[in-house]
Length: 374
Ligand SMILES: *Cc1c(COP(=O)(O)O)cnc(C)c1O
Image (cartoon, rainbow, N blue to C red; front, side):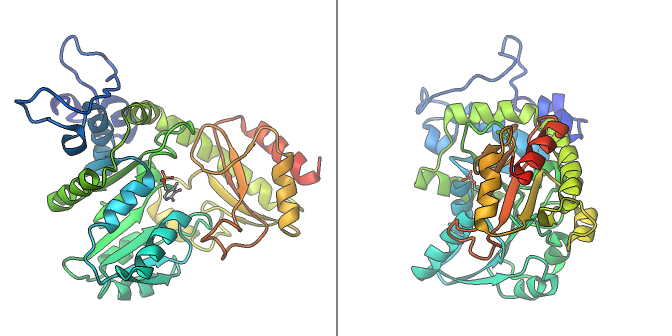
């Protein structure tokens, strides 16, 4: 896309988010338009977009690749990207997943196990020694850190330092941290994954996923999987993801500052039994979070005193915050997570709050009145 020269010397993520993924030739549009093309005039490198990509996907890949320090491959959704990583495994592989893990990943891994594609084990996110031992014989170590929704932080650096089979992959689902708070490839992981549906898009209006790797053979394998499974990103979605990326640093900074304030206030609230937020000193993996994460993120999980019905009632009373699933958007959203398939391990009254960019005092007023029962 752009020549590398204008980006040489730009090392801050904030500037790369704005500067990367543009065509800088004279006369080119300042912002790359969506290119809804399936095929191209023959005679150059690009013939068919499912095989060869489009300029719009490549803009997103350039931005995320530079941010993560590798080569990015964009997909139709986060799950499409995750499926492409699992697609790299041979039949009979050993897969290890965290005990607290995105429900879709649990579903995908469980389905493959039932079909005999691979064996599956689960380990506690904070069982660093267990993960290090697992590295000796596993083919895919799938980490998610912070985990969704319990927000446990894995010691990715220590786990990646353990000896592993030459063909083994350590992958990190970095959706909750984003490339701004954690760069898994720098910590020794082979694969860094983000659902761009969340923070990169940031406006609850698209599905997209990006996988970043350093190794060329892995990148080729992921692209081949995308091509043959047809897991291709949409033109408009990729354009919107690039648009979202431009403001991502600002949005994340604002929302995570608010999240810290709200986590502390929730922790002191009499109607709240327990708060999980990696930035709180009471958090079980707070010290790992401090060592590995640049920021503690925008997601808070808290248990409402009482049963599931008490938690549901809080969700039904919020007005500024939306009673909706998903996370990482400008809008604050909140939902009860137990009851979602694959999330049976959660306390019944646990609410996951994704803090958006609204005014923090307005958000607190909304939460406080919903907790009071108003
Ligand atoms: C949303 C999410 C995914 C899946 O991404 P989609 O874009 O919804 O397919 C994977 N991991 C985590 C942690 C997520 O939050």
